[in-house]
Amino acid sequence: MFSRKLNLFLCLISAFSYRSLCENNDISSGRSYFNQNINVSGCFFSRSSLFNGYGGVIYVSGSNYLLDIVSSMFYKCKVSSDNWCGAIFFDSKESRLKMVCAHDCNAQYNNFARIDALNTNIVEYLSIAACAISGGGYQSFRLNCGDQFVTNSNSSLNSALRYTGLFIVDPNSFICKYSTFSNNKATEYTCIYLSGKSGTITSSNIVHNDSPTGSAIVRSLGNHYITFSIFYGNSHRLFIIESGTLSVSSCFISHSSTLTIGTFVSYTNNTNTYTNAYKIPFFNSYFCHAEIKINGDISTSASKPKILISYMFPVFMYF
Image 1 (cartoon, rainbow, N blue to C red):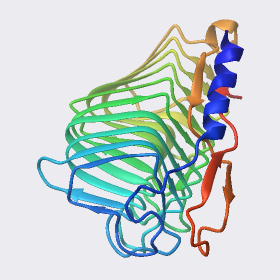
Image 2: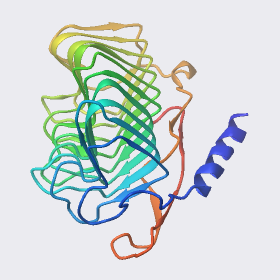
Image 3: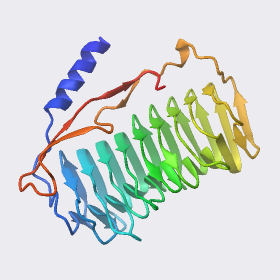
């Protein structure tokens, strides 16, 4: 049954191409969307030249706007130095990203996106890969405020000064599940930053990430929980607590150095012995990872390039 489902998804993705019915797909300057409700599907966006301003593709700031992006890709979206968000800057009411791929986007702040939704942020099947900027890029992806839901998503091969995997700020509530954070490198701080009163990461892979000496892979400010997850091959310490508490339970932890900076971390029912019980049966990303085949040169081709996802990334145990 699983094999048939996997083959079906691979066929669907291999046949998918991005439609050209999207506003200003690959213009080298100027945004595609500015201060409006946004509902797009099947779009390909690229900024092969640096854009001067906040949000290389989308800039929304106001009280009652909605953002809904489905089955779309942001490729090499970049803004110039001292600007924010290679692809998306959104500060308004509600947002949803579903089956979205971000590849090689960068900015001085927030390489891919910063999304502040007062009510709800929903992220499903998002893949962020290879987003970095030399000497800059404070975060890869930042979610602010509201009720935050992150599921079946992937953040891999990213590099940033501070927060390379996921940056969560002051949510009303937060849950992340069935997701993978792998091979991310932070120059100054950490891979995952959790702030706010409380939140949970569950059934996720946190593997092969690199943070500097004196920092850690997960930084927590508030009362947070990590359950039924896998920690493997990460560098230096795993957890740093600024305030509040962090509860780590029922996790597989394989780590050679000290686990924690600071106190107030509780460990319950964790193990460093791998068994079948710690295989996590989920897809890392339905949509894309890091390898992309492009027919046509986006910087010179007059026609819209056809994008094919070269492989899907099913994960049982990411080592």
